Structure formats: structure tokens, C-alpha cells
Length: 167
Length: 295
Ligand code: FES
Ligand code: FES
Image 1 (spheres, chains in turn blue, green):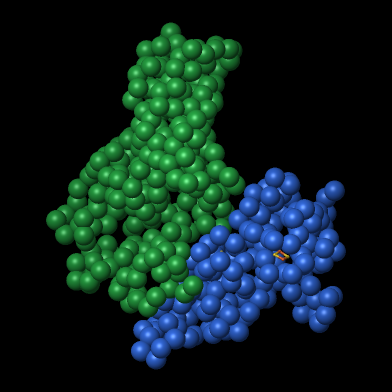
Image 2 (cartoon, rainbow over the protein chains, first blue to last red):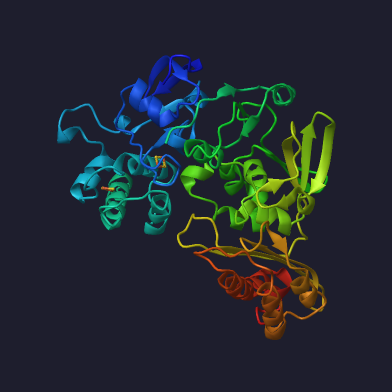
């Protein structure tokens, strides 16, 4: 970034904390989270909206962090994968969805995982007991080159049944 | 890659947006960003100025007025997907929107953005063409209105002059009891269609088609109506022969070819999908359902 890069002051709430920063106008939200806020849980893959690795929640709904400018998030509330873990250190600090991913071996390299976790977080908030089809539709917005998706579906359904207390 | 440098502007009113467009050199309008942002990130475009419409007041929302459903151009695909008004009055659009990208892109992508980007295989322009949508455009010379067929000039070329903004899209619902179907084929769900077909049908008391709209997306440079197919069904009973004839008309439309999808393949798809969409629309007409569901 050159020094004469146009910047703009923004205020963004990320995982409940308000951040005020000057940010390059052309910088996308995912890069802002990673580079300016050091929240490197959000990954950047294709940078054109296809892979889903950069997916975060903006004002409660999923969005591609690479297809939104950081300046557009001014005044918004953003949730990233860092918000999913509990307070306890170590594996016991995983949130229920993350724990289900661990139990079901729903990740290998983990590159796609943060984005998928955020999309599934949105799904489970809207519909605490989604069927397999609903899970697969949400996953269609993500690419995973490792798992073959089956275990991700299983993990999402496990998390759903735990949360809903159903079968 | 990363977007090239540009100056960013976030007007709050349409007037402010229009005066920015009039005064800045080489501005680009940013709507939902689901097409423009990839083009910036690929550096296919390097505008000096980006004018963001996301904070302009009054540019989004869905309402009914004068017998039409009126969409602000910045209405997001998500709002359309969950709109009871769209579901009740514009079932073709409600069905088509399910094919647009993914949850994560529909949350930001807009109707107006898609119409102005005018990808030949995008679903929303195909529906706008099928339903003869009216587009309201504002610019330095005031407000003008265009039907979709005059708006879609050519490949990704909308009839927008410099300094103009698409403000509103109006769609007149078909009569209660009409039939509809939107079908497409893509390699993966959420990809742009290779071919999409939209069919609308109204039947008269004798079960003959009294109104027909058949539109292909992805076949030509813009979505196209197929007047020969519409004429074949109009005034006829929609039997197997009529369906096959109309589908054959769809398969005869001049098609684009590229190394991955040759023209003959698009034509075959158009014929096959039309052959499925017409009976699907027929089955949804109230007259057909009342007759016990047999053709
Ligand atoms: S990095 Fe945003 S979708 Fe791939
Ligand atoms: S776990 Fe490697 S890409 Fe999904």
C-alpha cells in the first residue's frame, strides 16, 4: 500500500468490540480483518467470491469478505470465526459447532473451515433443526478441497441435533 | 488479486449520487458488489472513482402500487427470496431467485445490480424479460422509463447513458391462477446457467392458452423471448404435440458458442429445458389443477 493511498476513517464492531481505524478505501473487509485487526481466522482464497473461505457475518447475515470493502462495513457489526470459541483454553474452549467439526473429522487442512463455520452459524440461527438438504444448500457456497463434504454435513447435523435436543 | 486504487464515495441521496456521477471522471457504480468486486479484484476494471449506492436512501424495498410490484433497484436478492408479496404475486421470480448464486451472495447481491451487469445467463434479467419489466432510470435529464427489451441492448450492455442510475424495477403480476416455471442447467448449483428457461401461461375457460411468455437465458447475448414458441401455444390446447413444437422453436434460436459450450449444445439444452418447463407451468395453472391434473 503506497503512502498516498486514499484512506477513510471507519468504526466497525467486530465480535462485540468497537474498532476505529483509518483504512485504505480499496481494501476489502477480509483483508481489513486479517491485516488491520489481526483476526487471521478469516481466510482469503480466491478473492472473487467463489470459494467462501472469507465468509463472515455482517449485521447477522453471511457475506463474502472479499466482495465487500472495509469502508462499507462502517457502522456495521461483523462476526468472525474468532467469536465461536468459548472462553476456556484448549479443545474444551470450542463452541458446539466447532466441537462437532472436531468430533466428525469435518476438516483436514482447515482452510475452508472458518467460512463454512460462519455460514453454518447463520443457518443454525435461522433454522435450529435443518435437514440435510438445507445444510448442503448452504455448503454449496463453499469449496472444500479436502474432506469431500460428507463429514461437514455430518458435523452440521450433529451440532443441530445437540442444540435442538432432538434425534 | 487486490483491487486497484480508486476513490470511494458513499452518497446518501439519489441527487448526491447523480451529481457525483456528473462531476467525477470515469465513475463506476457499486451496488451489491457480487460482480463488480470480482472484476476489480481481477483488475479487469480500474475506475478512478467508485460511487457506492448502498447508503442511498429510498433505493430499496418491495411494495405494491398501481397493480404492479415495485422494487427499488438496490433491493437485495435476499429480500426478494423472503418476500411474501413476491411469493404470492410473482412466483416466477420467487422460483428463479433460488437459482441466483448462493445464500452468501444473495445476502448482498441486488436486483438492479444484476439487471445493469446484464450477464446473458443471469436469472434476474431473464425474469425481467419474461415479465416485460419496466425500468425507471434517473439521470441528468430527469427520469425515463424503458421496457426490459429496450434496456437489454447487447452482451452486458444496458441502455444506460453516462450519469444515469437505474432507480426502480416494476413488474406487473400475471392473473391469479397463471402457471409458471423457471428451469436451468448449470454444472453446479449456484453457477451461472448454461441455459435457463422461463415460462408463463394463462389458460382460458376452454383450457386453451390465452397468454404465453417463453424466455431463454444464456443462449444469446441477452435473454431473449421466443415469439415462435409463444405463437405455437397461443390459442392452443397445451398437448404433447404443442409442447414438442414449442420446444423445437426454442432449440432453433441462434445460440452463442464457446469452446466449452458449443452453440448446438445450448440449442439442445434450450429444447430439452423448454420441453420440461412448459408442462411444469401448465401443471401449476389453476384451470389445470381444477380439471384434475390431466393434460
Ligand atoms: S476469498 Fe472470498 S470467496 Fe474466495
Ligand atoms: S479442510 Fe482443506 S479445504 Fe476444506
